[in-house]
Amino acid sequence: MSTALKPASQATGTSIAITGGKGGVGKSNLTVNLAVALGRWGRRVLLVDGDLGLANLDVLLGLVPKRNVEDLVRGEATLEELLIDGPDGVRILPAASGVPDLSRLDQMARSRLLGALSDTASLADDVLIDTGAGLGEATLALQLAASRVLIVTTPEPTSMVDAYATLKVLWTADASKPVDVVVNAADNEETGRWAYEQISRAAEHFLGQVPGWLGPVVRDEKVGEAVRRQQALLELFPGSQAGRCYRQIAMQLTAGTDRAAESSDDFWRRLMDPSNKELSH
Ligand SMILES: Nc1ncnc2c1ncn2[C@@H]1O[C@H](COP(=O)(O)OP(=O)(O)O)[C@@H](O)[C@H]1O
Ligand SMILES: [Mg+2]
Image 1 (cartoon, rainbow, N blue to C red):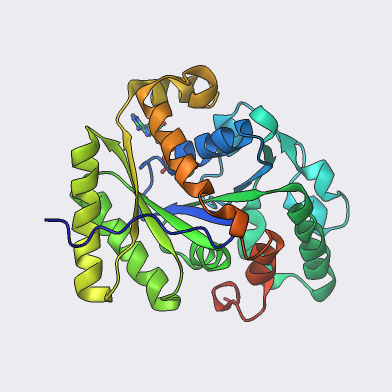
Image 2 (cartoon, rainbow, N blue to C red):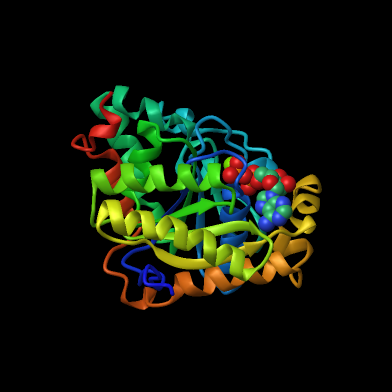
């Protein structure tokens, strides 16, 4: 019986934080491939590397950023100069590793950054943020600023416990945040669903609500091969099993976005809002 199964959230906005309690669960590969899938469907996608410890979306895509957010804040680069072009029209904002320093920015720098980032609203239908692992404040700030959150886990108990912990911290901060689960590196659909239901049951019991189910990404050696070749899996092996899963998830993400109630600049506004307490440490 699957009382704790809930369909994926209906989209309420354009910014999606991809997160998970543990490193190495497949967040960055999911982020990159969702971006490519959406880009291929003609959507304008902005990929934000928010993995503070291990920023590496550029590496996954074989790209070399020349500038970073610091240059923008100092007024030495425009947003356009910062963004790098990836596959399928996807644009990447590298090294949002500047994020934890946002709280230390003076008013001038803060408004310069916010102004520039708000401009991304005009160039993106979807903003995908790879938040990196952990329960740190900067990661939580990104989750809270996003209009919806994807929690990635594998079917391993350690990863599932971390995914639940992530969910708990997030819903403690904002119980209304739409959250969906992706189970990566599952042997098959059933295993993925089983892992989701474990997390979902715990959430139902202890948190009083359940996250949505976005589906599995099956374990597929092609993922590792794409990483080694520094190209998105969907570029290299679009017909692979994992590729099909990524597309399936991307498809669900677009459901209902015509009714999007906000534009992507709302993400930046919330992130930069001084009342976003996670940034004021
Ligand atoms: N579905 C999958 N099947 C097989 N290997 C995977 C899969 N997803 C991820 N991996 C492997 O795990 C590694 C870590 O993935 P990554 O997306 O960088 O994780 P994270 O961003 O969560 O740290 C990848 O380099 C790849 O080798
Ligand atoms: Mg990563």
